[in-house]
Length: 110
Length: 137
Image (cartoon, rainbow over all chains, first blue to last red; front, side):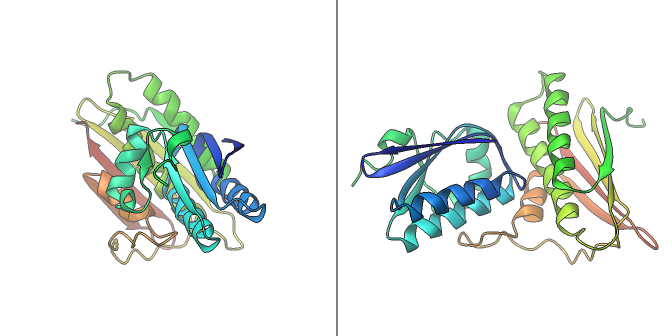
């Protein structure tokens, strides 16, 4: 898994490429904590390049959502592949992690 | 009719590197089966990986645990067995999917949700065998 973080106006985009699993999820958790500690609590996780997400990856996204909300922000997911959408639906996490088409516009409703 | 020889057979120490290697093997396996639907391949990979990860996460004791995973593709089904030599796992039924706010506990519930058959047999005095099957959609 590779992570690239991009700061834009008002929020940060973390792009996850490769597999988000038990072995790689701690790196995403650490990255989210670092971004929030740096003063940016609104984060989009771009899953466009994510090939696989397991339950540890899902748990990490939920943890990251809590981290941003505790800091007064929010976390959104974008460019979610169909297969990952299926898993979000099976776990009912599609209700709390709303999928946006593009990372750049995920916070546009505000 | 007996099932054909496994298409993937991977054996090793139960750690997260093993799970990563298993995912690599499964990627190669699906590459050899382009006729298989993407969702079948993805969800079966998820089930096998969740069971293997579950073994890894419960193998923090003093003794090294070993894993053997076999995956077979038949014309109608995807089959896998995951065997370990750990103490018998106390499988107290698979609970419901945790609440949306939970950060863990979804692995086996998710596994069960994507499979048509999911059974566990404890060995005596040790070892566990999980059998997984998903009908090809």
